Image (tube, rainbow over all chains, first blue to last red; front, side):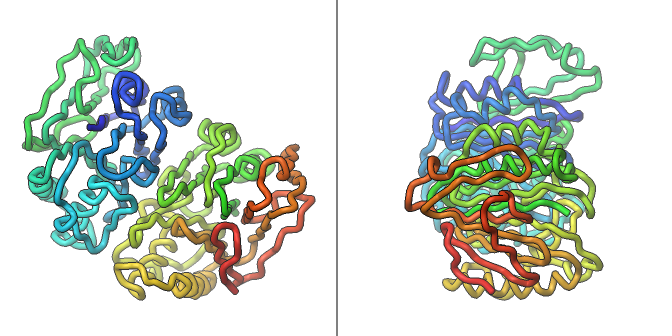
Length: 259
Length: 259
């Protein structure tokens, strides 16, 4: 199992607090010691920091914890390898350009008997994980259905991706986070939760390390910030726990649609 | 004008010395203050660090200068914007997956009247630079000629890309660095130089800042390291200056072919 973390917000927000909790799971409070990665969107652009080293001892993770990059959307992943060796090319998040946007994806779970299904034409895996292959198959399927230019109705695209995720879930565990840089989609196979924070803001206490934050001091009254994680990161707030097969699409911190 | 820097080596080598010289050009000794980026290949995997801030004052650039990431191939770029605003999506290097490999690209120069020529089908620009459009057009053209799976003969692919670069050079200045993670190609329009360092190693002195390195202490006798830069980075070594239209492909520090 791996740990997923994502954020969708209506103002550029730093993820230092949540990432600090997550990074502890990469070798201190959790067994996820096979690398980690984090993607920040800044406008249409994005940048991904990755390391094949455990996040709890990574130089680059220290940078992320100390340097508050403000972003409206973040996707992060800490890996415990099950399929594919420990290497940079097998480290999530994965990204591909489609329709002139950077799509970013991370997966938690394990799939079986997937090679035949994930036979793709246009998008090919660089590494050798089931996760990246599934991502390539999703994008390949989307292009086959919607063509080489983005349709006006992206809700149709995300609804179609949810049906693809339903198919993939037949092959094992498939908790997924996916974004085109604008909308943030997540799909639950067995472990995924989220919280939307808005005024009035309160205090939050991390489960994995002794850190408390007072969001009231860090935010303005109009901020809306949704955080998605494999398991709740704080123990004094109410997280929404998704059901198997349930999925959501958020934009700027607000729920757009889903099941 | 922007600054290009790349490295091809037969052993994982850090680029701290050369990047230190280059980063000075991003706001101290040079006018290139519109962001920078650097891609490291580690095996088939790669990671790119980017910042829209000047490299001479970037937190992330400080990390790169202090944390010796060892890599057999590096591509870096410091930007002075001419086409496209200063933003993360307009910051080089650009990357796309093709044939199951991460292709990375950086461009120095400026093009005119390119919109019609660079009309692409499969690869689309995320930002709004002439550079990224040219990259998308190159990959689009390569797929149209060679198909959806990699041919056995990559020399034919790079030779074809050189003819595409000849075409692009008709539209302005096109100094380019391109890699599929295995081979490193560079194409000269007006400013590009390289040096291959091998035993016996000596001392090198950076032009842009007061740093001297003794490669003899940093290397083993079998190391072969080629560094490519817009202009020579050191003033006590002999750099090869490319002619307009000249191009080379290196692998593990050694020249494979070119013109």
